[in-house]
Length: 409
Image 1 (tube, one colour):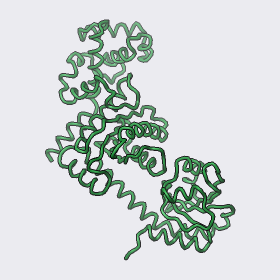
Image 2: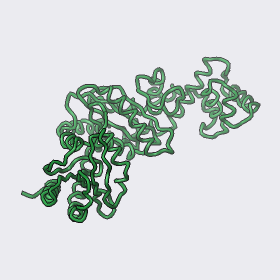
Image 3: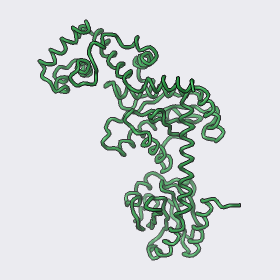
């Protein structure tokens, strides 16, 4: 029977440990334990915890990574940290043509004297670790494709549900929720955040998170027998925090969260999450992380805009011109209404004199026939402008056009 790459790694670890009479452990590049030898009395609390859980606790991972092991191309010694249950240890990064594949660990002081012997094992470990990394990457891609298919409509969703259940990734009676990020967040970044969070150890609630990519937009499928709503709230906040950490320049990270539901409701839950993310991005009264249930009156309005745009956007909106130009009447109206009619704040945001603002507001009233001193007219204008943003985005194509193309293919 042929040995798997994990079997080869374990044999190399056991052989090295027997030669140096020292326990040896190998993690993958994300800090997940792959193989561990027998102990020689040199284990510490952290090693025992990792052997039992197969995961590195988040505080310990942060401490170890603070020594630059992810970018090191030579062994590094890590000082002890008693409060983390961590003795001094030696880290040997395992690389192949510069790519980080994992780490070999020795616990104890003066283990640097073993560097020469260990380096031979590190060289031998690179090939099976690369093979294992490729297999793991292919598996993650398959899981992502299944999660993506589940969020579509029609036969593809039903087949994906069957395959996900068959592979043990979710149960037939699981509760699910969907999280969607805004259009500015790269789906690959979102997928990396999910993978890192689930493999490096954290305090997330017990629900499986599967990344997906729907028409270029990042999404996450959450599934579990219970506590999915609480897990979705936790994951939404964590996703925003970690995406912002990865891209400090992206200060506009928004996250939409669906209600919970059944497997066969996955496409409808995706719709809720995507529209909630849009509302979080476009409507200033909402926070950057927005559950669908908190969208209030905007929820049904957005659904109407998707299905019957002629009912959601009054024809007078077209009289104001394109809303993307900074000098358009549509943009002026939107900023004025976003600032609750504060002419000082609106003129500053538009970078115009208040006299110019008053002139534009008069033109808006003339073009639309609405009185901006009338609360009903202001609300109608404000909602219409926001719904026009929705219709100008790629969301209608995502929720309607793609669906129609799948059904016709």
